[in-house]
Length: 272
Image (cartoon, rainbow, N blue to C red; front, top):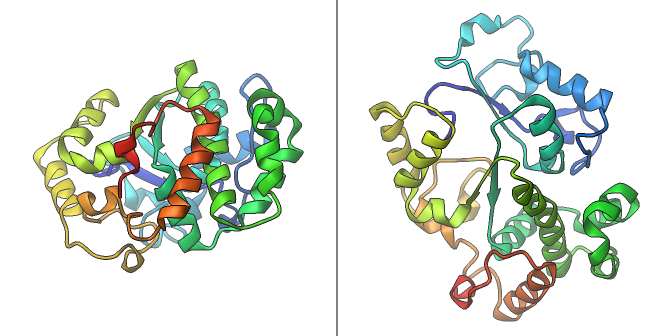
């Protein structure tokens, strides 16, 4: 959505599937330079990481990048798997950052559908002394309890752990934060407001792109490509309803409340 005006769109450069970074959800802090992070990110900013360019045939070695001149000299980098690098990258590279929060049940429904190995991420966090000391030590027992399983509970704990770190960034003033459900309820106005915050032009062409993307046919979540953005926005806001059983929803909410993040704390937020 943010790339609609003609910005180069970089898709998940820190995803292990791209073959350049070893694991998801690595944590770094900006006070200490990391040569590996910097080398990959410098390549991203120079347009050299072609496999991450979300453009047709851009990763083909004989395709000259001059054919993909951006309409705007800006670059959009979307990388949820690199979210624990947010403060590092924002601070050291002076990025304009948007942190997107999503309902816990929506996250659980999504990762269950994608078949993520959830317990291994919790074990990874437990092994990261710096991450635990700076963010997650108060939740050690919760991480340890569900680190040996791939379940609704471990998915909820993973979501809570990630959002604990991200909410700490929000409190530090690292970027802007947006709630997914707010965007879905009023996508055109909310997106236009976000464009103003990011100082991006919002013209009629961009509005038409957003209209087509946000108000398309209503389909079940399973029929969308995992990375598709052209989805019916109103349907996506609570796509988890009907896919999460009532007892599971109770468990997810109980786990979410233990992290103490002041989002999704009203009863109506949990009504399917």
